[in-house]
Amino acid sequence: QVQLAESGGDLAQAGGSSRLSCAASGKNLGSEVMGWWRQAPGKERELVANIDGSGSANYAESVKGRFIISRNNPMRTANLQMNSLKPEDTAVYYCKVEGWLGGGYQEYWGQGTLLTVSA
Image 1 (cartoon, rainbow, N blue to C red):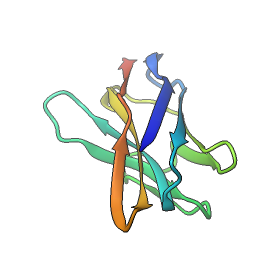
Image 2: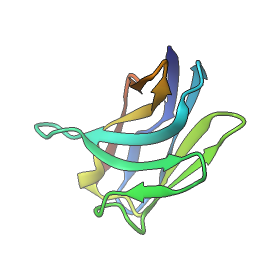
Image 3: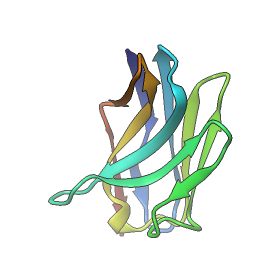
């Protein structure tokens, strides 16, 4: 099993910045990918950004150029630096870790942390 501890978020102003952190513990996953997803009220959960062990990252089009995901492999943490925030970035943000364990592909989710961006 993998446990995830999220921190950050809360309240930010439009145009401002915020930072989310995710720390993973427990079993290590093969080809582990760490990422952040978000779910806004009334909308489906969507990928914000993820990053693999080599540092290769993917971003949603809506956050490209504004958000930066980084990863510390020894510490097993993933941070999401969010800049130029917009009210539409308001959502519950979830850390997700996925990878191979015991011959199967596993996904683990954090509890979620709310980010509210005021206009």
